[in-house]
Image (tube, rainbow, N blue to C red; front, side):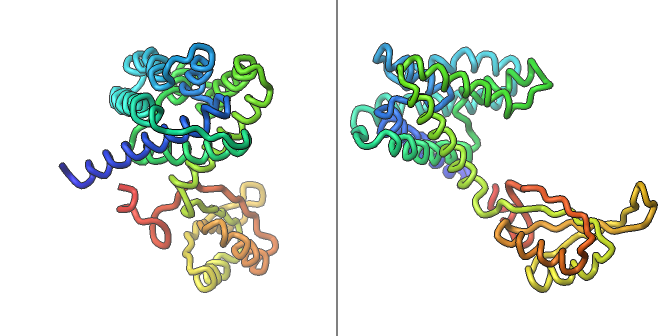
Length: 285
């Protein structure tokens, strides 16, 4: 087996175990449904005591069938593999031996979000997905193209959180579930993107060389200088494009202000930066 394949299997297996531990140890005793197919499964489990992993798999089955016909076959196969593995690990490996957290419910929601988020991030790093709302979001977006996938996922997650209030007969269930979903998202982003998230500045200026030289000397970054023309004034100008880490942006802003107080600056948040001075391409393989 190739080194890359071994790494993929290890990441997927570790992700499945950590995800299952977070669900069984923290999420279940908190009586919350933090979105996704597992959230629906947790609500059904609360009403019927049926195994959560099996319920998650059953909920995903019709979505997987739809994904096979309307989305990518590769995406469907990888999702099915991860879903089956997580379900088996949760029901037959973790739940029978894993104790449950009996502490504060808020802490349970937060720690559950952290642990489940770590597990999901490892699964994503392996190139797989746990399905559920991911599939539903893509299908909704395909049916209603004017909706973004993010909006579609938000709608689905919101419906699940509202339903959890009625199933658990507790308003706090929805609020704690929301906290857990938020923590999950932040942990996933931190692991997948980490410190390679940055800020991209697009600077319209008449002093491109001065700004670029100070960026190179003081921040040890480089820039790209483009020629431009003002649509209203018709005057020639320059556009300086520069990407820095978020921790360096305050210094970049100070440099721009000192070199050209009349500069026009647009700032975009970047989730990942690859290349010289940041993460290398080989690290993403």
